Image 1 (spheres, rainbow, N blue to C red):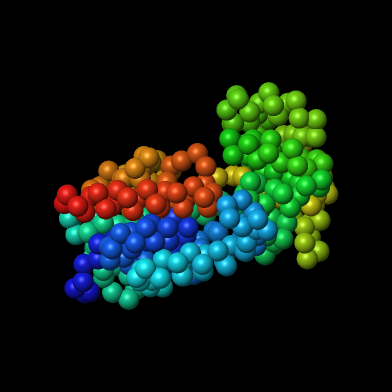
Image 2 (cartoon, helix red, strand yellow):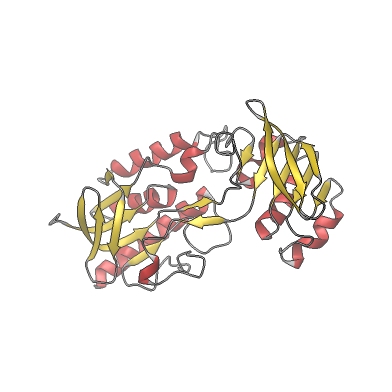
Length: 307
């Protein structure tokens, strides 16, 4: 077992994790960041990020992740690429067991993110970033003046359709039921959007492609009729799955597994903080995750000064 007790161990190397690491290290705290694969999380898989301030021409997501990593390590942050296998967050000294050993910390930042729920269609993963997207606010600008299909029926899908309707020539909303689950606040604007067409009681069965997306094959669940819709992009908005399986048994998550943490980023467990997409929150973006990382570091300083 590692004998050194870090001031902070951060689980996850996305924008929230590395911002928390940067701010904590600049406050002269000892910081270890654990990342399973490569820095960036979902950000690292995005070809071009156009909505993160300071990059007027946009920036590749992996490149931004590496810059965040380098900036944090400049102030002494230690990064280890190792999968976390289990955690014990309830004691005054937290235990984080990885494939390479067990680490101890006075505080822990949960920053392991979330991943979009997929439709499970052939070619879906291969076409991610080449016609298939899970974030309208991230990728919508690439489809200005084009035709897109949105799949889903909740608030995210409704908000995505409204956002895309202001950019795209045509937006199809495919939903497996005959009414939306979205809040009423979305319904009137959706009905008034002239370039939005609802495809009720239906599900996408196949992505039509030739190296890039050409359209989708949609099946009506009641009639069994199949229809091809030509489109330039497919936006999947059927929910996210938080990467919180290791934490749920220790409390502080909601029924869907999202970590509960307010404006302070504090979890109900003392010395535990949550930043980024694994939190229950209304907007999941690089800029919001980074902001939460800075907030977490501030309250970690406060916690360590009195504990």
